[in-house]
Image (cartoon, rainbow, N blue to C red; front, side, top):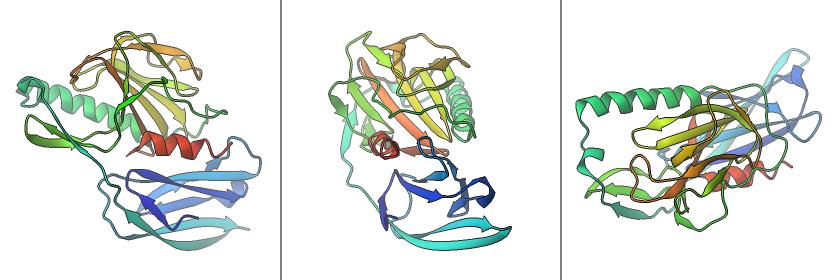
Length: 261
């Protein structure tokens, strides 16, 4: 097991076990269940997320499991290291920064809707192949960059921006079920896919969407076309990922998941 991890990264845990072992990981009182390995029999895995703003220090990770109805605990010290992220300034319409009462209510509702989705962990797994990026193009803005809107620091860049001229075809990163497909204030036309086991991929600022909530999509399916809807300065694709309710660097997550195969 790794002894250190960067913020907004995941720690992968694997174990030889069966369902009777009841494996769990606990980090800062957050309990994460181990799931059946997608490629190996009698093997389980867990993804432990470390969020972007987590304190830079040693965090205790506890793994619990049962053998013959007896419960056991193992503790590990994991050092959280802050990654070095860039900073960039973005000029947008003041209406997208200073919100009206109506838009505050809208964004609050959309935020809660998304959080409810991200915090929902399906016990079913939908993917059995490596994940792919939604398109193959230049990254114009990496994950984690501090976002300064109109001279005011508002957030960090919560995904990867890919260069994508208007109406570029966008692919599903892997098999899954569509949980959100709608226009949202900040993210514009948005698609969020549940891949099972608490893993979600997000596709924002789309010009067109070809899938609806409840649709099952397969890896590589064209789910929409790139655009500049929502808070955006031009056509591109914003690609984001979540694990067990925590926003994670997409590069780290996909690389980690693809080591399982």
